[in-house]
Every structure is written in C-alpha cells, then in structure tokens.
Image (cartoon, rainbow, N blue to C red; front, side, top):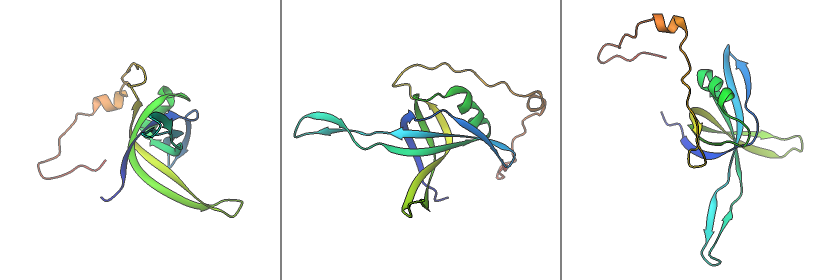
Length: 140
C-alpha cells in the first residue's frame, strides 16, 4: 500500500473523547507538535510554529488511549496520515491533518509510565490460536 506512515511526538492538547462508529469505539484527541530549532547566528534555541494533528485510535487502542492519556501528556503516535480539505464558514479553504493511529504511547524521554496489561475476555481466552497454513494469510 502507498499510504503515508508517520511517527509524531508531541503533547495532548485536549482530553481524549470516545465515540462509536460502526459499532466500534474510536478515541480522538488533538496532538500539538512544536519543533525546536537552533539559530546558528544567535546561538539560541527557539520554538518553531506548532503543528496540530487530530489522532483517531480505533477499538482496543482507542479504549486504552481513553484510559491512559490526559491533556498535557507527552506522547508518541505512529499511524497513517491523511489530509482533509474543507471550506470554513468564512468561505476560506482549510486543510487539516488526521492520523489513524496504529501505535500510541507515552514519550518516556519526558517522564515515566507504568504499564498494566488489559485482561483478555473469557471468550478470547477459550479460543485456541491456530496459525495460518504456510503461504496463506488470515484477514483481521
């Protein structure tokens, strides 16, 4: 597939919200990414313009984001990037960027975190894992 994959580091700009879409939970949050730059002339660091992304995390990842993340947390997000272009009420064309997250975690450069494994449901525990025959793939 030729989809654009990105890895972003930044700070949660709001609390995580969860909605249902097609019977699946989707967690959404805004991620602020502010690059630091070094000015060789002045020999000082400065913050460049903040870039904002909407992050959507589906199913179990979304549930875990809602339970784990709070506004202001430093996070790392990896997923598929897409651009949405729309016309505002002021009749101005606006482009926003969304990431469909595949992985989300706290940025451990900024602090510590404690991992708690999500318990499997009894139905999942009762189903034996069967590997796909060689040369075949299993659809998720």
